[in-house]
Image (tube, rainbow, N blue to C red; front, side):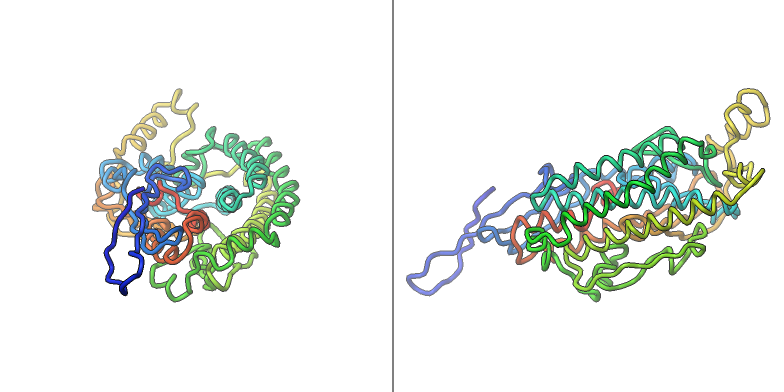
Length: 409
């Protein structure tokens, strides 16, 4: 911390005003990521904040111009790494839109299950961390048990947990096994009681309410002007959800509501995410029931019939020349992709995650832009914390769910 003497002309006999400048980040543990805020303080009240981005900028968009479509999927894992499967699915859906690949219904429902599990895992981290930043640690430890269960489901499907690289263009690498469905049933059965208890700990807790109500508010108009989407926009009272307004992956077959708040403060953001977890549980149950309705050969479908873009089975690669050739061409990008220009977006855990893909008919994208919701939220952060206390800046940052990997890309 450094002292800055701002010499202000004051009436004779008055004490000279002094402010302090504090570097909040880029390595401060409370920032939950590598980004910096230079805040000017009068005591503990924030007079001004200046945000800095780019500390973990990895030039993903530029790298993508030299990578075939399949080699871009691992880059998307490293955007919002709290919900990697959503990033993966969003990218695959964008590729399928450009390539004209039609996805079977069963694959859509399997994707919905994974995407909603991913949304829950993201929201439970965000809301439990908001609890930690208000001084309550128990809720975080309690919910982490169920993030672990979600990660075990991922492992059964793709072999990975955090940066999942889950799925393929056209569907999944493998069908869901019995263990994955057993673990899914366990989650559906047990998580509602845990989520209810978590809500009981916080929702009407006087200390938590005092810390979050009126903290970091934003109006619907200002949120729209910034380009807010997702829970942070819905907390301000705007019921925009990509799953409803521009359905994808057969979300139109699901019955759910869009929770909205009123004031756009930390408390409303907390409540919206909690309610979204309930809605995600309902969607998962609906999708699981629809998956159970497929019988016979249909119950074994886990990818589209698109051999030019879907990787052949590994056992075939080892034993059949045609499969080996297709595998090599797809992985190494030896197949030209159609020329065209598409924008596709999904309702990721943090908001609208979009991919603007331009192809000139070559083997790699001519241009690729990631629309990362966190990058937009962070522009508003100085406005949200101005006039508040320093401790409120931390809880506001947590309630926005700012993820450095998604912010910088």
